[in-house]
Length: 180
Image (cartoon, rainbow, N blue to C red):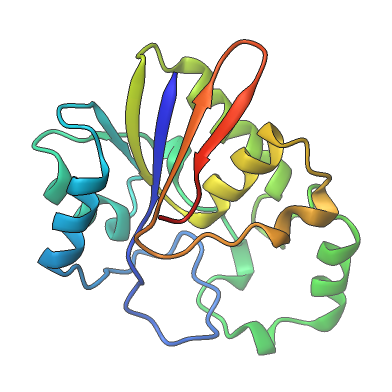
């Protein structure tokens, strides 16, 4: 199976805010949509996160995107909507000490995010698809497929409005392109 993973465009929110699953729109340029369409094979099914910043793009790329809640960004719980600088240092340190297992108060852990993303992929029964989602989903999937330990997950940088393509087989996952 081949997956084309697209991160949503830059959301309309001030820099430095933890936004996770907050409903935030994104400014989507038609040139951006045209560029993404040119990057993708024509006629593929498209799945999208239910969050507005993904849905807005998905609806411009495909006449009938399939919305799947498993593609939503990580739930940062009590951190959502707060400046990163206002989050208690001891909570951030606890997350840094256990990247995959720590869940912000009222939220979910990156490991739980990874498990729901992997469950989504395991349930796909198509030879090729487009997925409009978030950096957290793409990062944890790539980390799994590349056997990266959680301490290295943050090394995977996923740009806004970029396509990352992966070819998956029973025995391997081959990265075709990253952040194009």
